[in-house]
Length: 449
Image 1: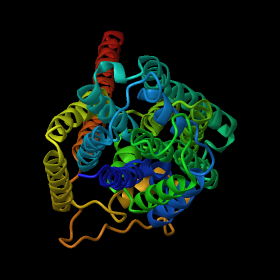
Image 2: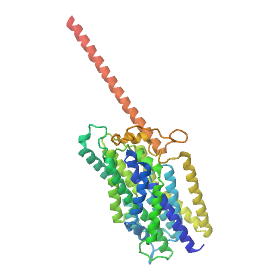
Image 3: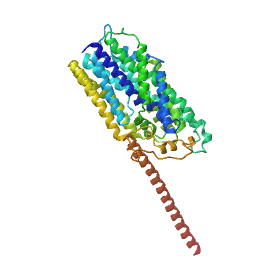
């Protein structure tokens, strides 16, 4: 198989990964404004797509981290071959689609890094990976970014509720924050374009360098930037509704002021990391912000079982995508036949995932149930407060994802616990009243004697 054909296959697969990155990460910007009713679902994803497109042209620092830092290349380094990059992309796409099917907001970025590392180790040995870059610009940000975003969101939520305390007489007098949410969620979408689209730019640039079609150390060409910007924008517009459901309603109930605090924290963290060239996960940052805002709002609760499942997904992302990529790399070593086998197996897996997803369809009409949106922001006035049932072909709401089911069970258990506590308190009060009445009767009889 000609080298130029291999390069073309890698570029096509990289752009498809960019597309999956778009719909996998739409929730990072738009889950909370959809959950509070600040934006209608279709409007939200269109706005996110446009801003992702714009953001992709604003910076190339992260692209340089991938193309000229993570994998050693050039004079004195180990050149990773386009075949290995092809295998790495297969590992990333497989993990992306699998986690999307189950509504888990895992990291598309770390799936890509894991795939590239796994394929590079099989194809060129452990020395092909730059350990210093991996540690300083991927591993440390992976651990620090969600924690940092969570702390900032916690503090911002506290401040937002403190400065609007005068509205506490209303059910949720902070509904005006929904207008601010439009601006803050837009900033996240813009930041997502500056960070995540660049990762695919870096992969394509790395491929061109590996094929001796571009000089080592140079940034992405303008056609690479444009193609990646369009791919991630199209993916964003397609929705990613399963993960929107998880982030918008699966972790905590989001109120307008709380959503604004989470979004501004996410945007600030992503923009700072893009400026420094840190290739962090926007999904982990957004999830950390939602959890932090849930802890920051008085009376709110975080569904820790759902958090645990998502955390496990984060933990397995790098090694799982790396293992899949390593297997694909071993097959690719066979030669042109191996590349064909990888392509056929990958395409078959993609078709299977999309076929399987139709058995439990989630789209703009049921990603966030209408009653939840109404309850999340009373002051927002969802169609004058009238809640309409979700219409589907079967006349019922489709089954929830495992994460959403866990959240529902946690909510039911919490309500039952509160109800049981109230009943116990009432029973104890009645018992105390009965004892007091009995004591008074004995005292009255004693006085009569």
